[in-house]
Length: 266
Image (tube, rainbow, N blue to C red):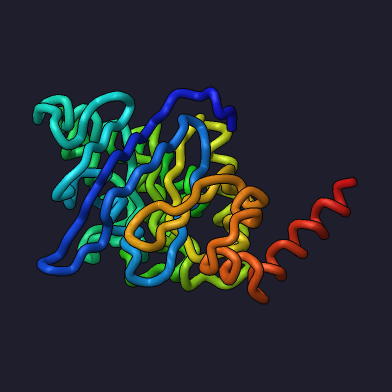
């Protein structure tokens, strides 16, 4: 990721509240085009809330959010609709519609934004996205209840890719997966990012994911983004949560795994 790349997402002074509870108080963050940005933070720091604010599901009480230079907080409805065509979202657990097949789930955003598309073309696009997400072709006619946890995640990813987005939001994509399935999902995310030139906003608790595929990591704490940088840059800070998170037993194990892979490739 080139730090000279243009900014895909700009967040300035964002405040989010639920009643008397303040979740964010002046969040600033830039996501650069072409990068995979990991977003971490303790429980209750509002990682998913921030994502929902960026994509317009939870407008912030204060602040400015721009995507590809267009305002999500002040822009007109037509401009925001055009922006929504340029991203895909994979919510926690996949968030599939249980009464629709995998293929029909993938077709939901296509039907919303391109109602003129015929059934044959919709079926062809859905079949392509299913395979792109690493699912077998016979997964398309299946219902979510017939899928494993890992397959549900990939079906959610296939739907997020339906509109050929430039920007991909992934909310805890490897949560609940075994280490092998999680590593495979990480590899798929990295491959899609490189092949399609995607910018990825990735919320995760998975240290292996952060080390394996993220260009930079943003840390939410104290109601703000307290640090953004590569993992070595974050390790050089003295914030207690960052030190506990990255230097704890799981952090050291993830770092050791990266070192082993580096030694193999040497």
